[in-house]
Image (tube, rainbow, N blue to C red; front, side):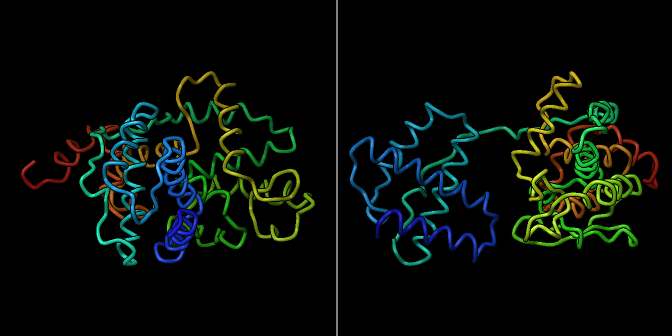
Length: 298
């Protein structure tokens, strides 16, 4: 079996069997291609079926000089998944990555924004510009609903159920969930949809896409990042702010105001509540308040 054939089959498996997004699949395949580049530069002739643990250890050792521990851990995890797939399909008898350990990394705590900082960022939007109302609606939706950037750009007009107070979101693994949407966020989306979007020359295939670029097509992830980076710079906020920061802030502010962690988990679309607990580091003072307010022996 050749590498290109193995990578193609693996990508198909990730897409069909595991239901991963295209972005996740690209990241997996890039890690394998990084290994191929190492083999080529080292003049090592090994196929996916014959490569040995020692070669992979050498690759990991060389990679560790170029990337941080978190990236190294991700690469190791991706390669383990790749060789597990080959074992699962009976191409190999054992996974050569089994005894290779990932570096110890601490849990990275997310940056968050205060409500004042979010208002400050939104205040930088030029509502007189053609894209102004759209950009305000984008940030209000990211923060108001706690969406991932991929969920935002994939949002459809047919996903909006404003009468019921919900939007339908397609998350990781093509799993759908309903997320509550507040009146303010609905208002800004309606302003954009009814006053700006309906005057755009919408290209075929994008008729149902909510947020469009000036050419009438779906926005890209990169464009959302660019919009936010520019606004944050104008606001003079010196934090590492990305679209995901608004998602973190959404969860953190709900938690700080007394929301149930299980409810936050459902709104974020986390499979495990352990993932949601990453937000618990922000403010543990409410835990003491819960005891004093609700425990029978308070």
